[in-house]
Amino acid sequence: MGFLGKLRGGGQLREVRRVTPEVARLRNALLSENDLFQGLGAHEMDEIADRLPMATARSGELVYAPGETGEALFLLKSGSVRIYRLAPDGRKLVLTQLGPGTAFGEMSFLGQSMTGSFAEAVDDCTVCVMSRVDIEELIREHPGVAVSLVQVLATRLRQAEDQVEQIAFRSVPARLSQLLVTLADDRGEVAGHSHQELAEMIGTSRETVSRALVEMKGAGFIEIERRCITIVDREGLRGQPGPQEET
Image 1 (tube, rainbow, N blue to C red):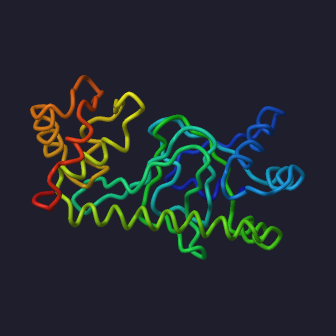
Image 2 (image 1 turned 30 degrees about the horizontal axis):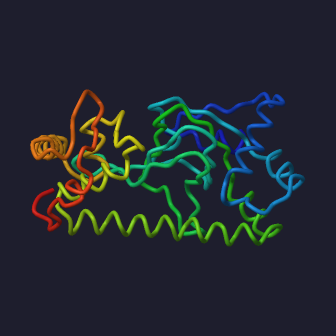
């Protein structure tokens, strides 16, 4: 069984077994677009790409789940992935949502762990998978990659600290307002997220999010349509009360 097969415990990845010229091009493009590999030459990229399995997951499927064996780093080529944990009462807490060009997974020797967490494909996605051996060889051969890894992990740690601070010290309206501003596109629209998904991103319940959205709409800060929230008054939204009162 190959390395990817050993990871499949709870995940639903499908390995791309036939390496056509198009698959090879996609795999090389994935590496060139990932911050970890900036500065490597084309020949070095080809060598690395040749030994990495590529896999796909459909929207809603798991890339990995708790209890998976082995250590792996997943490089996201296309689509987006949501990393989350389940509380003892079954509530889902979204730790982060990642887009193309990012890396995630289990690397305990780098201080990054997927123990107890799930990675779910938000959209159809394509990933390359690196084993611990791959990473160690890469760092030995290209020390600059180690610097990039440290920068990526430092950013993740900063994001985690910000999330803990938000949940601990800021009210639900303040957390929700910040989330809406972050998710909004250039037109001020937040599309494709249910109230449940928004709640999972800020560590609260769907009912609490629904009440907060109704109040924001009543205040003239947002407009709400089916699966789409439009920010009307960004400054007013940012002025939501900050102290923690309810979760």
